[in-house]
Image (cartoon, rainbow over all chains, first blue to last red; front, top):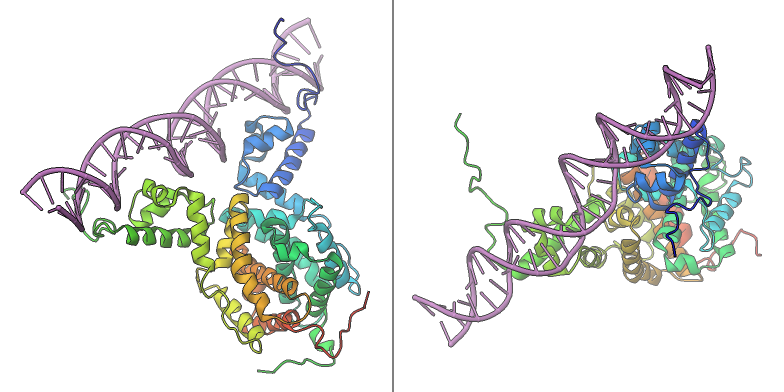
Length: 211
Length: 211
DNA sequence: AGGATAAGTCTACGAGTGTAGACATGCGTC
DNA sequence: GACGCATGTCTACACTCGTAGACTTATCCT
C-alpha cells in the first residue's frame, strides 16, 4: 500500500552529476558519437542523445548550437584520433586487412568512424561534413604512407574498399562475407591492399596493357 | 496584373491518365525506384513518391500495402534486370571497372541499384530487404561467373569495392577519387577486379604464405 | 548570508511522418 | 442509359522531429 515516491532516488544518471559544464558537454558529445555511429544522422534524435547523456534535449542545442553542429563535432571526435592502426608501410597491408576483418566480425561491435560515415551518408549535409573529415584526417594520413604515383587516388580506392567491407558485413549483413572464414578473408584483402599500397613503378612487371 | 487562375489546365500529369490500375501501379513503382535511389528509404515520404507519380499518398498504400512493401518491390525492380554488364569472364574485370567509373562520374546521374543500397542501408528493415535482393540477384550472378575456390567470397569482396566506390564518389563526394583521371582509375580498378575474379589456383604463383 | 550568473529544464510550436477510414468519381457491362 | 464496382481522393489521427523562448535551480564570489 501507499504509493511509492514517483522518483526513487536510486542511481539516477543525471541527478548525481554536480553541474559541471565541461563534463556535461563531453558526456553529450560521447553519447552523440555513439548514437550517430549506431544509427546514423537521421536515425537518431537529439532527445535520444540527450537522454543517454542524462540531460534534456534543449541543453544539447545550448552547447552545440544545432544538431548539425553537434554532428560536426562528433565527426571530428570520431575521425581525429588513431583511425589507421599502424604506420609501418611494410606491414600496412596485413595490419589493415586483419583489423578490418576483426572489427567487422559478427560478434564485434566496435564503434568505428566508417560506420558513422556509412549510416550518415544519405543526408547531404552530414555527407559533406563527413567528406571534409575523412579527407582531412584519414585519407591524408594514408596518402602520406604511400609512395609512388597516384598515392592519393590509391588511398581513396583503399578507403572505398574498407567502407564497402564495413557496409556489406556490418550494415547489410551480406551472407557471403559473413560466412567466409576470417583468416581467409584477411588473406585475400591483404592481397588487394598490397596491390593498392605498393609503389606501381617499383614493381618489376606492370603486366597490364599500356593504352 | 489580375491574378492567374489558380489551376491552369495545362499538362497536368495526373488528370490526363484515364484510370488504368496497372499503369498507375507501374507509375508509382517507377517513381518509387527513382526516389529511393536518389534519397534512400528514410529520405523520402510516400506523399512525395505519390506526387511525382501523379496520385495521392493513400493510393500508394492501397496498391502496395505499406511503404515497406513498396520498397521491397522497388528493390526487386531495381536489382532484377541486368545489373552486371557482361557475362564474358575474359573481359569481366575491364568491363566492370569501365562501367563503374563511367557511371560514378561526376556528370553522370545514373540511377543505380548500388545507390539505392547505400542510401537505404541505415534503416534496418530496408537493409534486410536489400540484403535479400543483392544476394539473390547480383551476388549469385557474379559468383556464377567466377571459377575456383572461394568464388562466393571473392564476389562479395568485389561487390564491396563497387559499393565503396559508389559511396566515395557519388555520395560522399571524395575529392581524391573525383579528381582522379577516369582512365587511370579504371585501370587500377581493373587490376583489383582481375585479382579478385581470377581463379586463385590457376595462377602460376600464389605468392602469399600458406598458413 | 545574499545576490549574480551559469547550468539546466519546461512548454510549446510548426512541420512532417505513415496510414486508417470514409467519401467521391469515372468506367465497363447489363 | 443506369447500375456497380474498381479507382482515386479527403480528412484525420497519433506521433516524432528540431528548436525557440521563458522559466527554475544550483553554484560561486564577495
